[in-house]
Length: 216
Image (cartoon, rainbow, N blue to C red):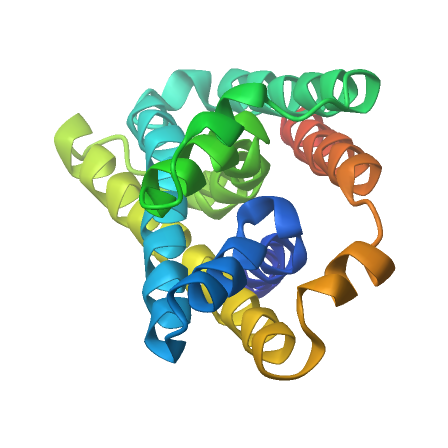
C-alpha cells in the first residue's frame, strides 16, 4: 500500500515536470499580465482542470470495483487499455490541434482536455485498482452501496494527492522560469517527453496487467 501511494505522488511529480500538462502556460500568463499573482492563479486553474480530468477517469472505475466477482477482469482490461493508449501515442506523437484553439483565459478547460488527450488519468487507473486491494473486496456481507462509497472516496483522495503533487512541481518550475530563467530557456534546453510519456503508459499498464494476472 505504501508503494502504491508513493506511486500516486510520483506520478503527480512526473506530470508536474511534463510541460504538456501546462506549467509553461502559467509562466506565459504572468509575463502577459505582468503580475506575479497571475502565475499562481494560472497554476490553480491548471490544477483544477487536471483534478477534474483525473476524477472523470477514476470515478467510473471506482463504481466498477463494486462488482467484486469481476475484480480481476476489470484490472486486466484497465492494464490493456493503458498499454494500448501508450502504444498509440508512441506511434502517433502529434499533439491534439484542438488544444491550440482554447483561449489562454480558459486554462482550467485546457488542462482538463490536455490531461484527457494525453491519458494522464488512465496512468492512475492501475495504481488506483491496486489500492482497491483484494483484501478490501473480502466484504461480501456488506451492501454494494457501502463498497462503492469507499472506492469513490479512495478515487477522490488519489486524484487530490496526485494533483497536489503535480501542481506543486508545476508551480516550482514556473517560478524558476519566470523569475530567473525566462521562456527562452524552455525552447533551448527542454527535451521532448512525448516518447517517455508513451513508454511510461505502456510500463504502468504492463505492471497493472502483470499484478492482475498473478492475482488470478
